[in-house]
Length: 439
Image (cartoon, rainbow, N blue to C red; front, side, top):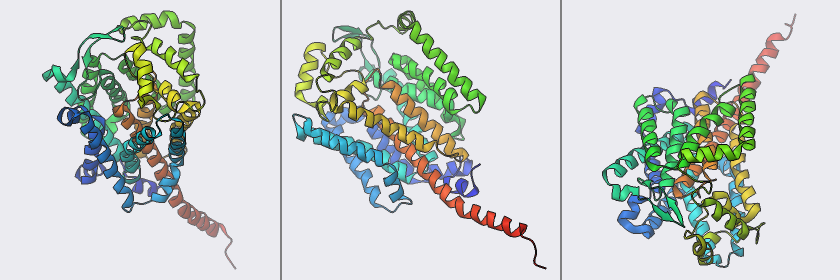
């Protein structure tokens, strides 16, 4: 059971805790920062793509200033996220393999600035408050995307047409740059809010608006991955996060049974499911791109083409000439192309390490709620990477969940350290009481 000191330092999802959330300017500052990072279309419409790049880099640099400000546990937190520093160091060394190392280093700088807001939020905000900021960003993004797509279809909708020789179904893109990005955000929002979002806000209207906006955007975006996420997150939640004791093992067994059933009858099930989603067996041309990407990966399987290789002109020419698009529609193939098998292992190990650190101890009620919410987002981001490369929108959600989980781990470790003296005093008092009285 969590100690009194843990409950005090970590806060709770009570009315008082939520009131303090709404009244703190810092929370609204981070809401604006993450909104700018995750919803690029408004900035692009007003300032162009280069204008958005400059704005995104500026807000990333501005958030780094907060690392200079005093913060409790800063040194411990910076040590705790050592796998992230190791990953950055590897990417910096891997950039030397890129035919254009200057472009590679610039791409690495942009990646670092993209991660900066979430990194600082994990240090400065309580996990439950970080989750509230993230939930607000997702809810507002889905709600405004639905409004923009309905009111301004020329801005918020992608028309149907042929791309890379494959007919593509049109759909909403809302405030995002592609309908698949809106679909991924909507699927993540629906699954996370449905399962854990009710406890984030005392006012149930936030929960209802979030679910409704996400469901509408899932339908409007016509993205298959959105429905996959909405179905996969509950399975993951009830198999891993929610149940305890025998029920957990039964859920894991049931999940494995479903997995092997899909594996044995995959052809019939896949064709049937794809037909329901309006897709063909090539996944809208993705499988052909994946085969070509696999051939490119085997040329440099260990270290890849160098960090930022997919941003180079040579890569764009090689893949665009064959498929008409400059990306592989798969985050993990992109990682293999850029930083190789070593980089992919480091990337996935970073995510797994953050999740493991946050699940090592039993936290307070509000921290457990935040941990479940962040774990669901992280799992959803991992799933979404199989069908689409992570755009800046989904990347920012991944960073929030990653450093939010590190923040959970830091809070749990701090509470454990604070409870040790009280436990020691309690044991000492018990021993004194049990000692025989001097006669």
